Image 1: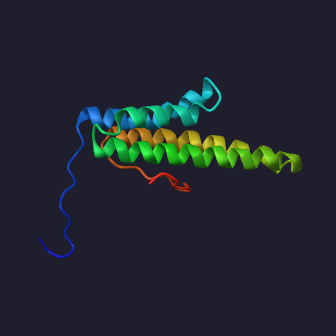
Image 2: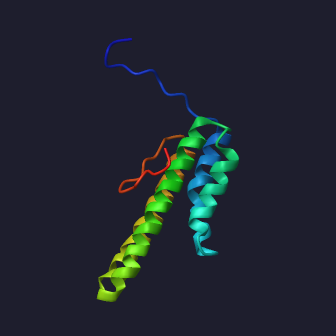
Length: 123
């Protein structure tokens, strides 16, 4: 191989892609109960991270993003005292919803997804 050529990345199995997608979509448990958006990805990732490196990577990414969203929501709640927090919370909710859907679709296609604006605490 030449200097600039990379080895082709193997496509994850259908099962691995499905579990990676579930890591992202499990964040929607936040609509069902408090902190579900954090607990869902954490549980799916912990149960299936050893299945495939792709599931491990996407599970960490989903959990890191949901932690970042939770922190941003806490800040926006504080900013509701000066009214701007209401707009900020709405923008965060819409952005998180859209990016979570995109990430789940990409994971199901076998493409690794990296969330923008994400604080990666779990390496």
